[in-house]
Length: 234
Image 1 (cartoon, rainbow, N blue to C red):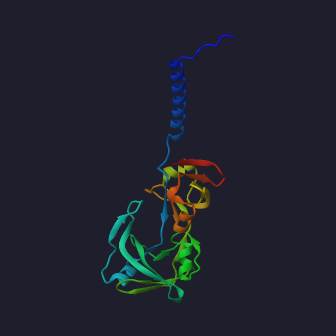
Image 2 (cartoon, rainbow, N blue to C red):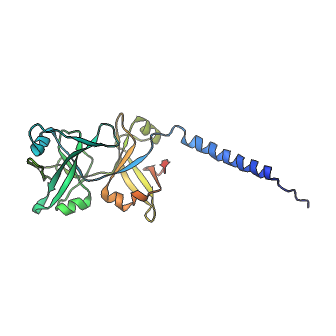
Image 3 (cartoon, helix red, strand yellow):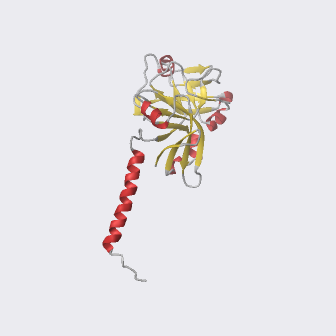
């Protein structure tokens, strides 16, 4: 049997063809993709009403923007307060986020709540009916909240184009798969929170971020509840 030697030029052509096929496939797969998927840890923080800002920081006080958050129009303020739980347990220097809201609300991780001696429910932000309260201490005064302390339910913010791309609607649940060294994990039941002019962003709390080693994650992937792979971003 006669063997035909493969010339270097033939090898190079074959490699180019394979690469072009793969690149073409990637171009099709990513065409029309939504905003980049961002996963952020939402550390303990407080939302305040205008009235409570004045009570804590003095008459006429307003929040002072310090750092813009990922979502447009939202910011971390320079102002911080201390949270006082049962039996006078305290977490100092908790950041206030702006702008002000109609109801004051404290968002903690599970370990924060244990430290304060509070039994807090997992709730969507804004749903504070029947939740525990606490005392807030500022430099100029004290506010006693009758309710408003929650552990924020993990969620994903989506705009209209993201809803269409992922095939979900406001209030649906999704899963988040995180690939990270030694602890690849899927977090279930992220609630979809839809709004106009919003960026695609997942929020988890500090406990969850530490558990999944988010800082070392090599990829994150949103999954529909039925297991369908919707989109993957490294």
